[in-house]
Amino acid sequence: MILIGFQTTVYLMYTAVFVVSLVGNGLVCYVVLSSTQMQSATNMFIVNMAAGDLVMTLFCVPFPFVTTLLLEYLPLENYVCQIFTFGKIVAVMVGAYTLVAISVNRYIAIMWPLKQRTRKHQAKYIIALVWTMSVITSFPFLLATSLDQKFDIYFCTDKWSSEFIRRFFNAALFLLQCCIPFAVLLFTNIHIGVVVWGKLPPGEAQNSRDIKMAKSIRKMIKMMATVVIAFIVCWLPYDILLVLRAYGMSLRAWSNQPYVWFAFHWLAISHTCYNPLIYFCMNTRYRAGFVSALRSVPGLGYTRAQQHGDELPETGRPRVASVVSV
Image (tube, rainbow, N blue to C red; front, side, top):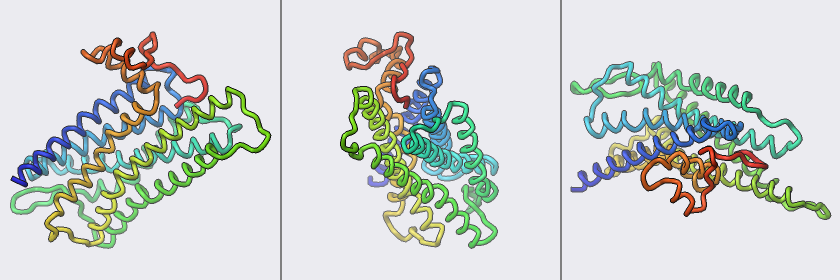
């Protein structure tokens, strides 16, 4: 009964992640790409994160869910195993590198306010660089991944030329995916918080426009800080578990090992759901855009949006902010 209950819970949890992530990240892409007013540099980075999360959802939910939980083996060819593993790592790296790009972009804008801000075409170049770096970082794992046969059953695993090479690349992946991005995110966001929430020098006055701008910037920083915290909380436990396994720590003898692995794996994969929810809860323009996109769905139309006080633009597209674009 415990095993059946656990399997049922896992099925429901992974299915919920798949549906929420597809709908949420699809809405993020639609809201930004359907309105030229929303296509600021920061929003282009947000769309890039949503695209990475969509890749993560398609590569990390159906593939291990069906093969590991339902079939308990891999009934596919070797190249399919390689593609899914490669796509998963690329998607994770895209999310991490894009968060770094957003934080560095905000850091430069706030620390040097007179410097020219990142334009949309510049953001596209940065996004291309993010994907290029992610592909290069993940390429060794594409070459090392292959099918492994045991008792006439095939499993997707990684095979390295030596144990030292395996540990080296896993440690390098942990540094590039977690340690370095986390360090950059903490540094930039802490400095931004100190500057934005710092006290105003004596005798310096603020007019209503300055107050409105400061409030808008603080809202944006709170939203992006929440996105960063969600990324760290979701991915750090699973990455630590992978590093421990790569360095020879065996958890097979531990009776709770399957539960811990699935809990950490689900927590990491569930990160694909949280960013759209954060945007919906903490940004009025995204919230209005989501409601506008869903107003054709029965029960989520224009009347209900008006009752909840959400602004719906006349064109069905989100309006641009007058001070700070997020």
